[in-house]
Image 1 (cartoon, rainbow, N blue to C red):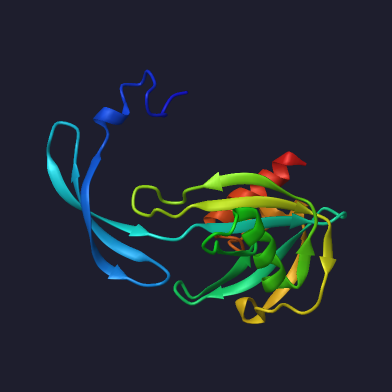
Image 2: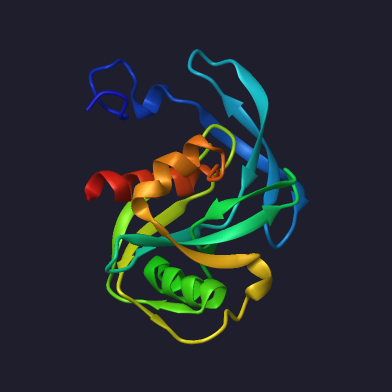
Length: 188
């Protein structure tokens, strides 16, 4: 397959960038900013900054009426409102699918039924080591108010058919949410 390491497009692991070592710049429980010394093909060396993040999980949960569970959220960093699917960090020792089920329930008050892997995304692999494990869930059971109700203004079941319109209107802008919901739309 073109673009993969070790194929016939001239790239292989031996000719890729090599990380010669990293030093911390800022370390928090949520992210680690690091400065890496890298060697480029041909031997040139330079400093490159990278952001290491813990892996995340997200879930596109659909009901029997082809509606998807979305959270209406304010993101203070960009000062914008928009719909997102439930997401959260994977705890140490926790399987991604377990984290996905926990996060959906904590953020929405709905317990997912059968869950399957939908996609795996690295949103900005040139700068960030963020891994997004995205699941598809069917059937949902309401178990009570969201434990993490501060996560969103409200929870809404939105017809999946409206997803392209909401993306076009800028009401869904989170890259991984967009990718997951478009996968769900085309899978129907």
